[in-house]
Length: 399
Image 1 (tube, rainbow, N blue to C red):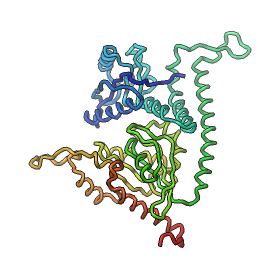
Image 2 (image 1 turned 90 degrees about the horizontal axis):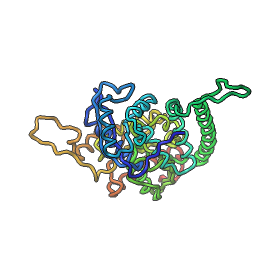
Image 3 (image 1 turned 60 degrees about the vertical axis):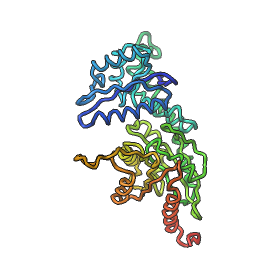
Image 4 (image 1 turned 30 degrees about the vertical axis):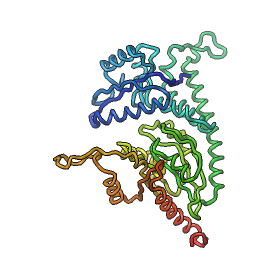
């Protein structure tokens, strides 16, 4: 089996395309995120390449001239990885590798990079199985090109020089069998986890959701007074963590699970669906947003789309705009004839517009600076207490 392993301190360049509906600035922002992914995996970002196209080239994703430019730069600057900000088809990857023609330079797409990070971050056997399943599902349609150097025929039983199986067919069968075994193993663990969730009784459940690296685990640690791993890296949390929280006299369960990201590989969404049962079964979703990120509204849309994909879009949602201490806006010239752009909005203007325009309740906080946390606790208390009152109307803890 061919695996991608990104080693520490090895240099990488990043490749993206500017399509008609997008702009160069947006593509560069996407490549910044791709560079953050690579750094999370252990590589060092070196340079970004972009090309304006009507659509990605079916054969090589980018034009051959740009590909030769990348090849020359990579060879001249000891680049180990060329990373594309999209999922390459097996044909595209083979053609790009053939054009570069240097075995010391590895071609990686966004999906395989994210899979690599998940493999590094997985700590429990359950998370490791989920990542392995996603890896095999990604690998299966790409086997044909990966194993051409090993292609040979194996004779069938009782034959001499028969057609038999090619090495590719053998490898494909092995991968399919491994996928089947992993699905069976995960199904057993899923049943055990479902039993654990059912044993928690009727406690109100809140689930932290959001883009990766927005501060969910930090918020979890503050509210639950726990020690969930939190770090300024993408996908710091893979395994779902559930803690019992009591605010004043009202108890509830709070869960923190894997963060979402733009173009999250479909294989990972499928493999982690059972992990995300905590989200689907929650009474309220607490959507944590990094308001200091220039594309926080696009990140919110990515989270909403992912919630739809896993069947949790209809849940009551409470939006927590985090990191207000890091929010920066571009100064707006009051004498300018140009209208204000999103990046010109002050924090007060953002707060006023969201509170006025959105039906979804929201709050603006800084988890690390402890700004707005008392109001957050008060809001959560009211939401949970209201649900409690509906389930146990005669319990005297509410009055």
